[in-house]
Length: 318
Image 1 (tube, one colour):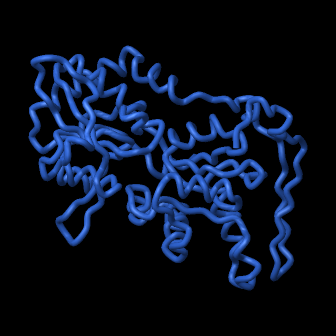
Image 2 (cartoon, helix red, strand yellow):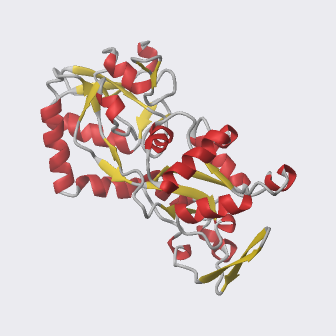
Image 3 (cartoon, rainbow, N blue to C red):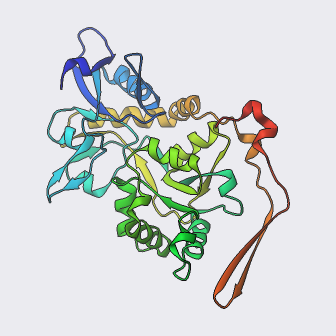
């Protein structure tokens, strides 16, 4: 890794120098004016100060988190740590059994569930992922010609990543339906958070991500809302990856536990997860009536109250 592509984040004379790999995904990490900033950067600064080291960061060279390929190979940030190119990986990096084959993980510093980001005007009558799946099945039933289906609401997630892989192995009927839909419709998958966000904003698309990321986006873009996973399909834990047998794991875990116990991590999270749209988050009452007429299913959604982002324009971003 070229030193020009790295940046010293936390420096202290006579401290050992570590190399860390991260992932460009705000609010977790980004490089702004040649400085790495974000939630996980601030978190690592606290760990470095308490453990006693300085470090440099660089972004995942292939733009991936860490997925197995060709049997016993691993790419992304996990591959960087596994091949000893990095001493640690810190990002919105999910702990999985597959990744544990290559690296050790610290205790989790964030825990969350799945959620779907969707435009508010596309989410009328929808509250959960299960609602989304049910509506999608009705909208895309076989008797409808493709020309009528192409402009209906659909959903997807990252093309490669822990969510897609986990859903492929899940036995829950809703998880199976989500995966099977995406497997049959690969165009519903995206390569990056930016692409997923843009598709949501374009309308008629829901982007399935971890709930902390959904919470962040829906807190600053008031035209968006989130659908919740009430079935706990994929409880996700974000942790720091270290090489197998790393002597750092005990000291890292000690600091992470201390920061969680004192509420420091939660206070740090609140500095980045700012909700400017709380005035729109009150539950809007609605009734859903499903009418079956042999070959046709009609969903009638009756709003008993509405909320318009434009009435709070000073607080809304799009």
